[in-house]
Length: 267
Image 1 (cartoon, rainbow, N blue to C red):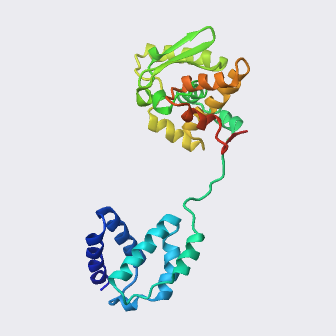
Image 2 (cartoon, one colour):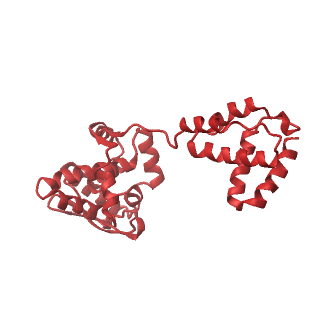
Image 3 (cartoon, rainbow, N blue to C red):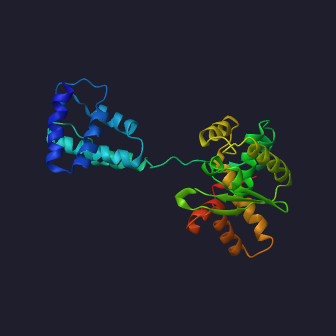
């Protein structure tokens, strides 16, 4: 039986290697032999190995681990017909460790149109606030009426429980439409003694997905539009730092991924 062959190999691995490495190589051989019924190692043909190895181990790292697992299997069972070194070299050159994905494009006009067409104000106002504040969806879900202030056309948001404990006060980008309507909405929530302004994080993510959006894209939109507006009144480097501060990033390298990611384009 197949496992009568694999068990001695397992012991062979654990005698020579660390537990993690032994476990990894053993898993490789189990995967390689999955669906195969053999009673003796000699029944494992060279043709089978050369066909199944590249198909069952897709990435370069997976293929390399399988090669090492098979090499040790051959040491445990010298009668095994091993593929030649040239075979492994040739197949390895065909492998890569990731699948290249197309750059992410955020369609600003389409996204805003989807948000504006939402009839439920509790959802619409949350998404529009994300676009002008850069709040994460978890922070939106945590907002209470007392966390918002309205002064001379500007909305100020107090984040109490930000990611990593980084809260603070955020002066939002201008949005006259939201300024008037959100102010009335907050008053209504206060009148009913409601604790939270918006839906839970899970609900907002689910509804965004239903509309073909990602909640975090709204934070990306904020970062890019905020920098554009700031660059009109201050040097680019200073604008970058202001965006970092408003997004509450400890390191600018994090903010940079939002602002200078070549794979992220906003039409």
